[in-house]
Amino acid sequence: MTDLQISGVSKAYGSTTGAPRVLDGLDLSVPGGSFAALLGPSGCGKTTLLRIVAGFLRPDAGTVTVGGHTLAGPGTHVPPERRRVGIVPQEGALFPHLSVARNVAFGLFGQGHGEGRKKDRAGRRDRTERMLELVGLGGYGDRMPHELSGGQQQRVALARALAPGPQLVLLDEPFNALDSALRAGVRADVRAALKATGATALLVTHDQQEALSTADLVAVVRDGRVAQCATPQELYRHPADPWVAGFVGDAVLLPGTVADGAADTALGRLPLAGEHAPARGTVLLRPEQLRLVAPESAPAHGTVTEVSFHGHDAMVTVAVDGLATPVDVRVAGTVTVRPGDRTGVVVTGAATLHP
Ligand SMILES: Nc1ncnc2c1ncn2[C@@H]1O[C@H](COP(=O)(O)OP(=O)(O)OP(=O)(O)O)[C@@H](O)[C@H]1O
Image (cartoon, rainbow, N blue to C red; front, side, top):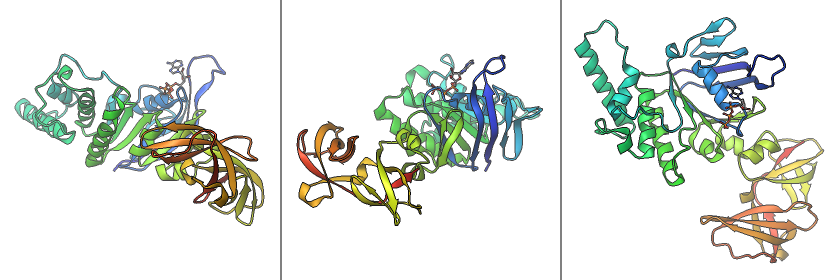
């Protein structure tokens, strides 16, 4: 298992001094065999970092090491073809004039120097078929790419990236072109295939649901640095700051005053995760921590201003008495309240406090 270490990586495009830094001393550590996601808004530098790790770009400063070997750093630049890094690009990555099997075998040409040509060919055929089976496409080798669905094409692209046995696989928004019904299934297949090989993986995405549901570790990138790197659960429950909280999910933010390990807020006195000295701060809750109850049985009351129905659940916006900003409450899809209704609001679980 091969870990990936990125330390102090900076990059500015253009030769003029003072060009803005797209990456600004970025650090990231991905343990061997784990699946990490780089999550951030458009233009925050995710693809730039991926291209530096792949070797297509040189960083201005910092180092990239894989399995303890420096691939990029002061005076060192291992060329892309010698990095043992597989790449799964965005849609349209397959050679349209080659069969599925020849697409997958493409990465294997030039391997196995010194062996007989026939043995090479047999070995390549076996390896290609094994990779296609791994991604659930055994027997599809003779098809042409245009005879496959979008999801199948992306799985072939993964098989091609995995065929040479890379130590690290980089996935650049590989699910973008797939419709949402197909995405979840393809994501799960790709994750399972990667786990079966033991390769370390780094996925670039701007889709928070994709990152949270697919990765073991999510690194949120902001202004050229990692704002927080944590497991999906830790990131969602204990975001480092309100920006990260809002980027990885819906957030309810309220002013609060801390005393004796709890915060006094317009929604009542709320227990806090972690220890906090007396202070004023911003209290964070997730909409599913709020519940609508009969007004007489709640510490906080308000008026429903909006109901937005999503099928499996619904989001109810409530203007709470004494609170300047309305709060969102996630309820079951069988929602019965309507705009204008008076309601009580209660909170379950602990809140997170930000200074
Ligand atoms: N070759 C280039 N020359 C100059 N500027 C570039 C170049 N490539 C990217 N940039 C700029 O660098 C910044 C980061 O781009 P990058 O593609 O790394 O972001 P990203 O996070 O991957 O965005 P997206 O999610 O939209 O793909 C952007 O402001 C972009 O305009």
